[in-house]
Amino acid sequence: MKIHYFQRYHAKENVATANTMLLLSRLYSYSSDKFFRFLKSEYFADSFEPELVFTLQEKSVDSIPDATITQEGFKIVVETKLTDWFYADQLMRHLKSFGEEKNKIMITLASELMADEKLADFEKQLKEYNETQTYPVVHINTTFEMMANAIRDVIDDRDYEMQDVLEDYLNYCYKDGLIPVSDSWKYLRMQLAGTTIDFNINNNIYYDKAERGFRAHDYLGLYKQKSVRAIGKICARITAIETETGVKYTPEFGELTDERKQMIAKAMADGDSHGYDLRTIEHRYFFVEQFYETDFKKITSGGSMGTRIFDLSTLLGIDEMPDVEQIAELLKTKSWS
Image (tube, helix red, strand yellow):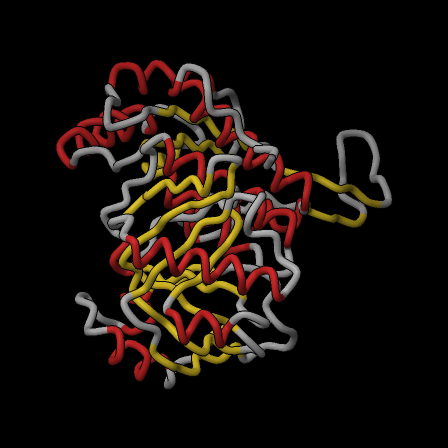
């Protein structure tokens, strides 16, 4: 059984806040350098520079010490909603949470951005408030997905522990509806497929342990030897496990047909040949319409050690997806690191 990092079974709004703060604290515990890179990223719109300042012979009131190490004060206040239920009067009251910090950030966090009119009303009141302050409060309106993406940008595929933590956070967000799945059309999920890639391509199927979470995606890519070698569009997703009374199937997306049952049985037999237990450990089976060969190369040193998500619309510079075969050809001209 997978042990989750993030709780799932209590009052949703409080859990959403607690889980997000846990994600940030885990990032800080894992690497303070990556945490501060996150704070200085475009996500915070260059709001502040929370760095240590090293000074030699800085004059104080009565003496001049040899050196000082200083960090300017900062405070981040977070208000979390499940949807856009923010109210300006509540947010204005939250401003009392700040003291004399030089860097003050208020984050409004939800599954969707604030409506333009509501945001403009609060920003107007905040501007009037800031005119009375020595140091202004910067407001950042964001979503759970945008925060997760900003954290993903400061870690890499060698940060195995944080990748696992972030995947579980995303899985929690998807299950609780905190991240909409309407944008799955543009995402390609890369999966490692070294020993099974021929079976996967020939049978248009890929399997993985059901306990592993993932963000919504329409396209699946198979990675081997520093390149995504094939991609396909997902047409069904089904979990399966053998029980005393037979195989238990759970369709998550697409139909459970006799043909797909037969393919799952074939995949279980293929797993046996590689020493994988697909029978007593529940697995998820991704069916694609067809895998098309490609060569989407990783250009930095070392192989990939885990899954990865690619935004095809950004990568290819398009707003609408062409057919899969065209995408496969376009990816041959691209690379990643």
